Length: 175
Picture 1 (cartoon, rainbow, N blue to C red):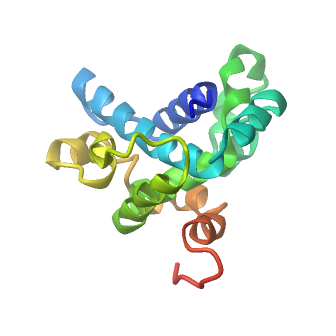
Picture 2 (cartoon, one colour):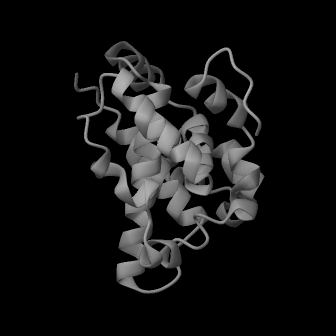
């Protein structure tokens, strides 16, 4: 199944990398972006596991970045000129929250990637998410802000319980 979640994935990954930018030059920015995109892809595929789910979010839209901007304080930096950033309407708050959780909790990231085999999105190769589940030193250095649990806590806390329930329905997991 190929469901087009690319606008949601691209916008949400862009929001994460703007809110928690890379530390370093062009290579660090690229490594940070790859990690954000991998986390957002896993989160989006978990959130919208079927072609029907993806089609519905494509028609209705994901909701935008307003609450995320408010939680992180980015709304003050944007001012009233939200129309200058139309991509922000494609940011999915739940996907961003789940991705933040995956970026800051390695065990949860591994569990999420393993859960993708149940959906129709994954190609079945966990290697495609290596920078998410097994980042090396250069990955961690490049995405120091993006993977910092304290910085991402306000975002990840928004929908953390839903992610835990999605990964392990009916069971109580310690957060």
